[in-house]
Length: 207
Image (cartoon, rainbow, N blue to C red; front, side, top):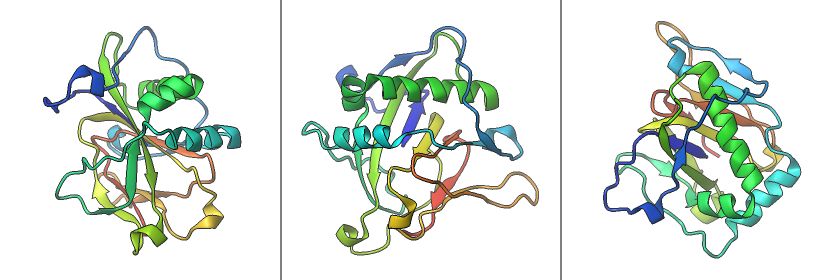
């Protein structure tokens, strides 16, 4: 998962612990995507099929095995979740700069088209999480309850495992105003969804 934080609020961390990205110039063109519409526009979701190739996915898995990658436990105390998670933004930036740059550029391009929250000169703090829902290691189904990613202007989820290898794990997003129903996106290998993490509640079904 990629998160674009607009504000960094963990004062105990220093600059060496966070990735800092300055937004520069005009936004790039967004790739072709399928829109999951909703009202208001902050709840719109972009589904990009085939965002990562098989080679891209292999490279991300390799990055996650880097000895410098550490597990994190920074979830809100009230958030119910069952998964393991590691932060990999620095390792991805160092070892696979082209993938890192594509993530940053795509996030900004889709934001410009759907939510328009990132401006030239803004400073953001990308976090890239490598999340594993391993039922055998967890001893129970993996899941996460409905939640928002506080302060995240753009959040992204990309599927790195073949969907035939597991059951469940459907991505859900809240419906819009009135009677709009919750929306779901069934991802294929390498597919990605981009959404306004701070505004759009999202979750997955048990894996």
